Image (tube, rainbow, N blue to C red):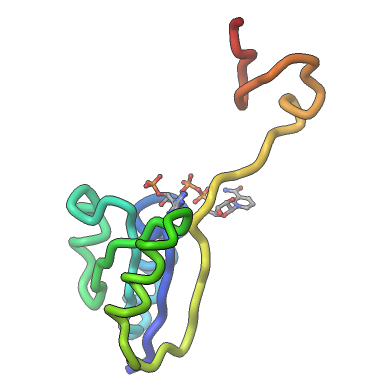
Length: 103
Ligand SMILES: NC(=O)c1ccc[n+]([C@@H]2O[C@H](COP(=O)([O-])OP(=O)(O)OC[C@H]3O[C@@H](n4cnc5c(N)ncnc54)[C@H](OP(=O)(O)O)[C@@H]3O)[C@@H](O)[C@H]2O)c1
């Protein structure tokens, strides 16, 4: 059985990819910053949930150590945040997506 790692798999595109790869016979290692809260991911057959915060060096190192020498066939580094929207880029003050920050 081929193994895929999907980071940021507890919601959004990562969760959907985890569902689809698992449904297609892959063993999926889905990562989440808070595995205990990744209930939808935990509920998928053929998915092992592991902790990973991609912005935390200690977490990345710990994740790699836990993987050990396990062969990985596919790595989907999905975790992240979507950058500023067109609205944000045009804003003349610090903004959040969809609204201005009030000073
Ligand atoms: N949706 C789009 O239209 C679109 C377009 C272009 C690119 N993308 C990219 O595709 C990826 C997924 O998009 P999405 O719409 O599914 O986003 P999303 O729903 O916001 O989900 C983002 C995922 O990344 C995780 N994450 C964020 N920062 C992390 C970190 N430091 N370490 C580990 N996990 C982290 C989140 O975990 P938490 O739940 O813990 O926050 C969540 O699981 C993102 O990288 C995004 O930039 C999306």
